[in-house]
Each structure stands twice: as structure tokens, then as C-alpha cells.
Image (tube, rainbow, N blue to C red; front, side):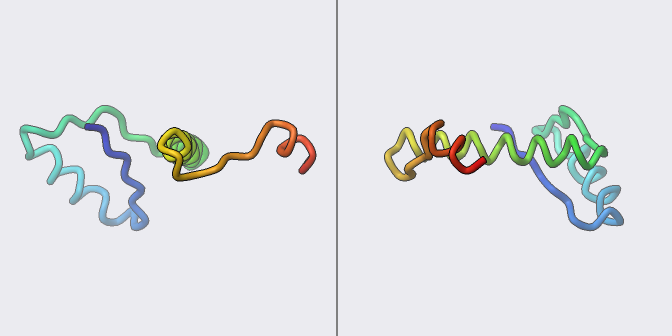
Length: 71
């Protein structure tokens, strides 16, 4: 299972990282400090969640035509 965390307080990051490193069952794949990249990953994860909800019939997505009309 993969979990993406967004830590709001930078002062807490060192403590959390040390805590996670101490857990043998947790593998830190990548740490992203760049705010733009971090926001992109958050948006992408949200998009995947939307697709999953759509496939389950729990969410209706806009058509490409509707998206273009908004522009």
C-alpha cells in the first residue's frame, strides 16, 4: 500500500521521518521538497481517486466538451 502525506508544519518533518525510518515495515520511496512537484502529485492522486469513484458509479465526471466550454 502506498500513502502520500502532506505535512503542514516543516518543523515536524525531521521527527516524523526518524519515526518512519525506525519502522521496519515502512519503506520511504521518495521525499519531495519542491512545492510545485508536491502540488502536482497531490492533484494527480486526487484525479486517480475521482476516476476510482467514477468507476464505482459514485461520481459523475464532466465530458471533454464541457471542460472545453468552460475555457
